[in-house]
Image (cartoon, rainbow, N blue to C red; front, side):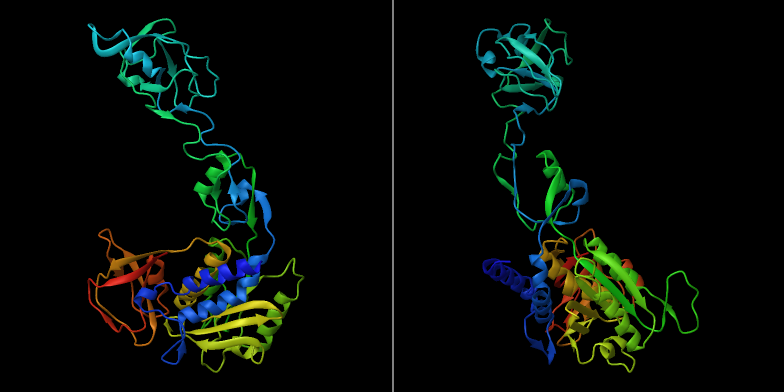
Length: 443
């Protein structure tokens, strides 16, 4: 990565870290706790080297969800030739300005002799004056023709055989004609490096003839869920156990965002066992090991916080952000591999991903796509703790208002599953009435 690129990236990330600044999200510390924006900026600095990985070419069908690695330049124009926008008749507009139009049997129309039909994919002959060629949508306009009359406006409203006649209404030059290059001109940059590749972008690349694309390789992430209370989904629960929701939740979120994910559950509160698992993850060669380790659980203030104990004295720093839920966080590196440690409650884990890590990946690497942010009216009143960015789950209504789903608790997984939005309540706000404007992230 060049110095210029690094500076530009840092500036963009500084802007990304201030998402919601109009509502009061600021860098620094809030009530003695690091702010969300400050922690996001630290994540960005930790992960910035991952943006310098070499671009790789992949088949078009495997590029979905990746970020484009280089600017994409159109090798051809779209459309590549003048073609018909309608099923109809290709004509010369000048023919309507001579004798024969507005005749006594068909006011406002002119009689034409029907030429050979032009299906899509055919190379037509030149259209001579006084002729109208049946033409299909997308077919090449013949030389000499400069307008199309839809077949339903013809008399008869059908395609007579070649040599027969048809009455057509007046058409001006350019009517229902798609000009070559009217969408994309050859040589133009059509997609910038870093653009997330969705169906529309891949469709454009296919139309331009690309069989493969240069992309930024997806990150390899290891998701580690921890806790002696965890049972694997599908296993019977022993007394005091719960099923591991965080691992599948976080792994699915990262996969949906385009990362290659390995999920490992360490079902113990023994820090030595967790440390051994982390060492196994970090030991493989650079070509096989993860680019990033994301843990969930064991980062709070309890007596059995395995993640904090396992990484004590290392290069991972633990703090409590001015955020609810998801306050307890860890960030640093283990054996040279970036580590992001999320809390163990499922909603806290999800919010940490959405608010802290996902925006950084979007801005730094180009994928996943940024969440759509909008302003909405609050469907009901709420209260929020002073000095904390509260993130509530909500559902966008048909009238544009956002209705809260469940309470602020970090265990309400059912409410999370029925939500489609995050409601951002700034640190300085403690109460909002129904109808108040709030920042909403669509999930």
